[in-house]
Image 1 (cartoon, chains in turn orange, cyan):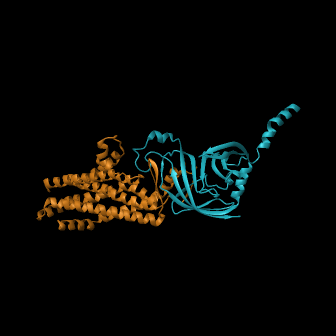
Image 2 (tube, rainbow over the protein chains, first blue to last red; image 1 turned 30 degrees about the vertical axis):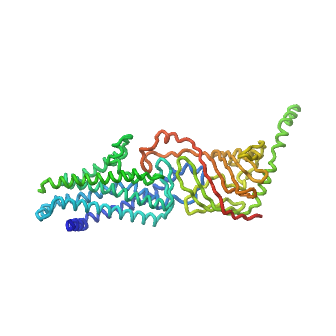
Image 3 (cartoon, one colour; image 1 turned 90 degrees about the horizontal axis):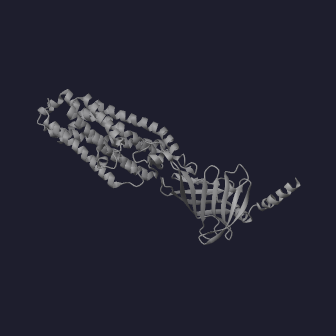
Length: 276
Length: 217
């Protein structure tokens, strides 16, 4: 199993599209940071407009913490799209190049092979989120400094710089679970569709539908609480003044459960299907 | 014509003679003017229904004739009214005072007066002050500004000898925030009706002031 995982990591790092994807992500991050700076100005103008009548402000809210928060708001759509392309591509490429048949001629268990792909996909996703977290904090703090974070979630919430940093870190961890879910789902879709273009289209559709359904209010129903699309903004819970930890833990466990379910379906289908 | 002038004199002359400046207010103003400089530590607590903000800390410094200065490592919201202990903003332009009798607060009797601006440049129309004549200081103020609504200030002092307050409660009116839907974060929990109507809310800010360093004339 270790050898399979090593081989998968080697293949992932050897393929040029992995590095193109990372470069694309860093570029997107830079553009988001740039636009977040101007977006941040407008947001602060709107948020503080009626407070200006009664208060003088000392200190600035357009700082690294606000920019990381704005990056997070945009990142969770672009990032899974690129992750899904890379992760699903790791299997569809093997179907296309027929290297899968060569591997299966070796004494390699089918379920171990596909499990190693899932493990590497999860590891890669976590590493990418980690890299983006690191670069987001470094760039934002380096360019715009630290300061209080202001967030509007039904109420205007102000967080001191230290508290904001901790909450943003939690948000990255929570967001990473969503990213893992989308990566795992795309690999399962690759098992089903085998062909790269079809898989990418279905993966993109899956992501878009998830984002659209996230905004649909299904009322106060269990479905509204446990449906996978509804779990993908769990990270926002860290920006309520009082964090609902029960909700965060429940959503995170559910998201892990969904990831395991998609993984199990993928392994089962791969095991049952012919390679040819 | 002559009887008209007589009637005007009878009606308006006593009133205009009465509308001078209250001597107790002048005494307090003179006492405040004896402060040429002070600095103090400030702890701010905001109590507004739609704002969640932890306690904030700042330093403030005042030099006579200059606006108050604030410095803080945090982001702080300083109320526009409530820290003008010198009463300069009320007495900057010509005004008259009208006695309003006495008022009782927490068992203590205070002299009530109205300050009415007679100059268009003033940013307030009328202010009500409760004066603590015994200790020569202001206990409560209600300022009706021309643009920013009404401010009510309650001042508490550490002891009877103190000239500057240790606790100031500022009550003010504030418009409910109006944010476009789908703006920053989730939007499904937003009360759409409330968001459309906006409306006015009252807010409070508590200022705890300590470590005064005062320089007198």
